[in-house]
Image 1 (cartoon, rainbow, N blue to C red):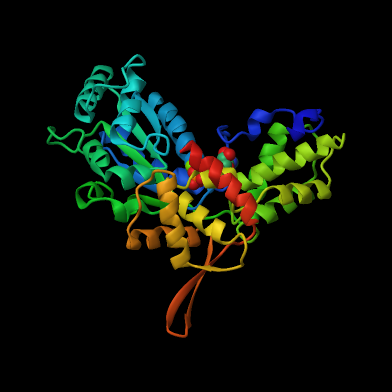
Image 2 (image 1 turned 135 degrees about the horizontal axis):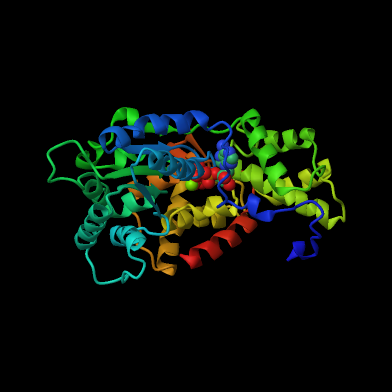
Length: 392
Ligand SMILES: Nc1ncnc2c1ncn2[C@@H]1O[C@H](COP(=O)(O)OP(=O)(O)OP(=O)(O)O)[C@@H](O)[C@H]1O
Ligand SMILES: [Mg+2]
């Protein structure tokens, strides 16, 4: 590893740069926090449960805001003598109902076996625990898209009807769904009816001005004083901001900050130079960060890999060719093939997310869609994808 010789002359506390770290202050998400508070405060006064959907592009602070909100709301309600308990489920890791439900039971019973119980049975156990402890439970279903895509909205429906037998509007389970897409359309009517229109909060991409205070806070927490000045923090914010290559992804900004520091340290300095930031930017492809590729489901990865292989020797390929190779890859990786319409849908979403370029043209006998790659070399992307696909 290249950074082995890092001396720690710039970074004081690496943990503060990790993506799991939850800062106390979330600059430019105060409004969203306030909105969540407004929606949920009723739990304390009248025990009415609420279900909320948080959605927005990559790195806009959805996860961190949901986590911070739950922590603060727990503390606030405690002062009002109401017990709130939170279970956080990452649905990219738990793509099926019973695995997600297990995470909820496990919260109450750490020794709960991970096999042998149906979703309904687990739901019943959770119900008993909630009554026993007299708590209101927050279930955060983060990155909920793969779960809904795979299993439909049954689990969300069941959780929304948790208190079915009660006639009053009182409830004991509230949900926060978090996703990049507005998954509302994917929910079946029965599950959708528990989400009011006003209970959807869209997180916008960060502008460079939005990112500045976020990165400045991290610098203060994670770096030795004097290692970077405001001008350079601004440069990183400009690169990561909505207007720059990072497209408003705070994760990219933090990654850039960390890498710049490591490059500075490698040169034996205790200060970050502008050149370090430029080199760091060269090392991270804003569109193809590991964290971004990991979010893709297996089908999207295979379609992207098919495109990439086609694009190794040419600037453009056409969708027919990609689809053909995609089918071969499905066999190679023992994955079910998508039908033509579904294939198109996924291809379109890859292009919407900026991972692939696509352009429809009318030539000669009909319309063709040309596919291209933006910043990264096909070879580099191919390697990354192959590794990820093998991991599943
Ligand atoms: N307003 C903010 N203040 C401080 N840190 C932030 C803020 N917004 C995001 N971050 C940080 O940026 C990183 C990405 O944020 P987060 O994981 O919440 O994004 P996300 O919207 O959930 O992205 P994804 O869609 O990829 O899951 C995290 O390290 C998080 O702590
Ligand atoms: Mg997230």
